[in-house]
Image 1 (cartoon, rainbow, N blue to C red):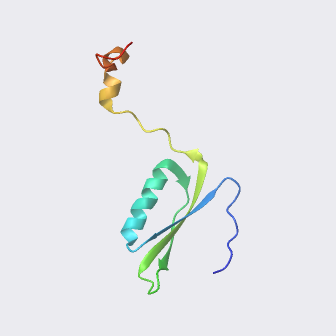
Image 2: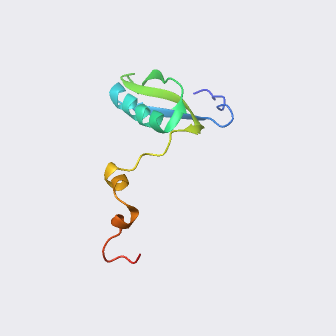
Image 3: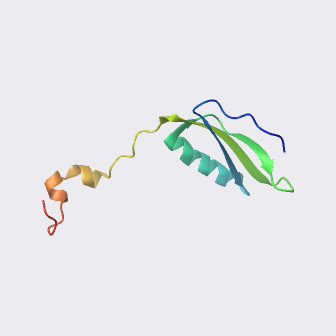
Length: 88
């Protein structure tokens, strides 16, 4: 195994290894929802080369916006969200 150059400052290199290319793509898609990243580079993995190794470079300084709250939470007034036994 050869030594790899570190990623650019502020970036992170991520390796996803799976027996299935589809599973590796699904994991990469989840990461893309939360971080800006480049197009994945795919390589064979495992002793027989039947698995998949996917390389991504993430830029955490460009993260995705926070997840939206469920519509039911945003449709009620704040006072309506308090449980009856909770102190206000």
